[in-house]
Length: 319
Image (cartoon, rainbow, N blue to C red; front, side, top):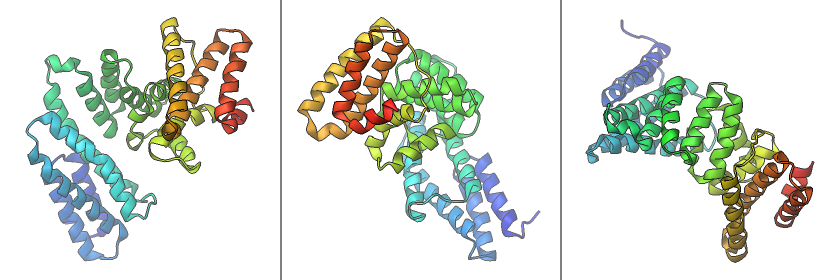
């Protein structure tokens, strides 16, 4: 059947992207889009889709520079953030409206990366490698196979329990599967372990995307935004599931608070990062005191510290 309408040609291009994973899929998509452009040179979606396909064609040509499958898969995923920067440029910083196109591109990219990582995973010792398991789980999430993503990310977590990147991906998948309580717990843990390891561009769940956008509206961006996410996650009621700390965790928390307090005093050039990181730990300490019915004086002492370093956050917290 020969497609004779722009709509049919767009559908053909998107089907090629969703079911393919290499240069052939990109070539097929491009051919359909160029035919569509000939029918309607003013069609904004066709122009947009062609730009996306061309961008990925240019990037995937560099796969030849990598010899190992793991490096090839890593390279493909590493370009995802750059792709969104490209979208920001061609859309003037706004969000593109062509969701069907972006979904097809996403399926293509993560399917391509998944093929490389599955080659590495095999059925041998790499089945116990948390780094490979994380990447496989991330790719399954990217193509919408959330149950398989959960399987591999949970395996990765078993081998590397305190990894912020794995925790944030696992939280996102739980949210997508509507396991809201677990998602909130895991997101909070991830932002406590290492806020900078969370890849917000790869987050899909409405819970975290809305929180990211609200914090960005407050004027935060880049590394600072990541540090303030858990603060406002608590203040906005997103990270509302809290737990009692084990004795060893409490000891580590107090030690990290002591270290950050000293760093905040001695490194004024790092205040933008250190202040929210410290406040987040104060929040965890207060939650622990409340959960264990500790001496109210300990809570008041910690609240006073928050008030001293950020009166605005203090006022929001006590409301």
